[in-house]
Length: 318
Length: 285
Image (cartoon, rainbow over all chains, first blue to last red; front, side, top):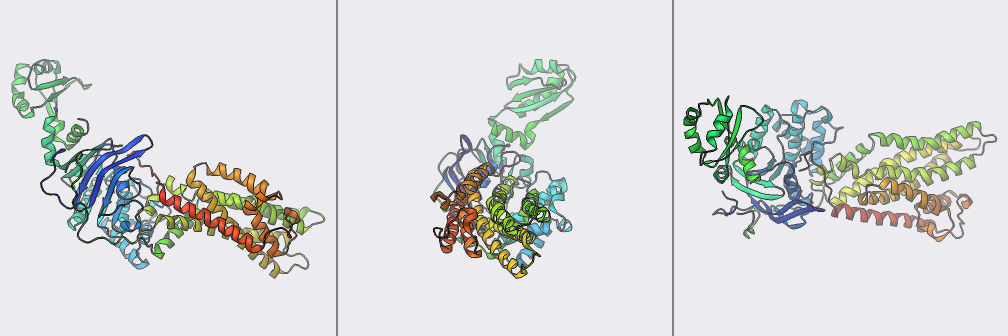
């Protein structure tokens, strides 16, 4: 994976952004972004305000690109009602028609999607089962918890059995059980041959769904490809390792002399120091000696770099 | 693949081209209508509507109870052909049309319409239809009730005549409401200040200009509605400064109302199809 080199074999793209920019007046939502996404699950990652929702709204025809071209299944989504037969969107916003029950909401969505009355009824029952909401289906949606609303929103995206799914922060607000179930469901949908683009600002959510990720920040594409390859990419960036002990000043005095240490910070936690290094393996090997030489015990060691969150931070804030 | 390099010109589609027919199903349109009506009938707006229409009804009852001698023709002119068409109908239309799209934008539910295989122009037209049906049905009820309060039970007053006049008034109200909703609906796509601008329009055009016997009144909804009412119900046009010898024929006024409605509906549908609606997201992303 690379941010600069193309893979050797290009799979046919189901979703394609060609030099797409989107401005909101003076504000840039998406900045000259090119991207091709094939079948399976792809994670769209970025901090809040990165442009993820703008990308999804462009891909679902809710917004028109200011520049460039968006293609989904080979067609331009803007003002293309026919394309909506083939795509489903689970929007980020929590809104639904609050006076409806979950079941009536889904039946209405089925009808809006062009299903006949009976087909909409059957589809509603099917997707309620899929998202495990059958038991609460006849309660008004205004009384639903955040997790139940997420499940219902996902269900409406599935109601017409679309080939392409856009899921905007679908796991936000869900409990661990729901999260696991929704992840299983998304994985199952991908195994059926669907194309699924899942946005999130939390890396660990997406890493459970897919290894194929797209990183965006400030409307720009930062990186995309396999998350393991992204790990290689971050070796170009300093790793931050946190050490905790009773005499952090003694530790810091020793560490600043090490060639492979790029910086030492003393955070508010009075027992901690944060070390930046580009050679983490070597650093870890030398730590026991450090503890002896500084005559200062190290009680706790942990690295942000063990979490994908840190990978993300490195890449969006290079 | 690269974020910076231009993408290779490989085919960007799966093996079979998808069916991209834009033709919406009748069921989908019926669902848009059902949701629109359900939304219109909920909330404070419907109560405000009833309050507005209850005013002439209450005035009619009070005048009939306390006015001596009671003149039903005077009450009818002032309320049925004055207050209701001149103020209450356009205000009611403004109330409902202003929220036609804005409610869905603010409540973030517009997405559920826009991501479906329904052309945007059809969504807009069905929404206008929904607002027109709700306001017309309620206006017909309140018009009939007010008419009954003015003339019902009087000596020599046949119930059949009241029913016939109620029917004519219902039709005329529906025509006027459809025209007003098409105007205010279009205005609502241009500006968030539709209520302020709409009230200004009602005061100046429908309130003042339509009553002045001058050419500009031909451009008002109220003038043509009154011409139709006067000709259809055989009224004397003096109360509205309308000289029947010079006033347009009923068909001309009908064509003017329908033409204006079609024009503003078309513009609204076009604008709804071509503009973006940014639904805010929780994190502003």
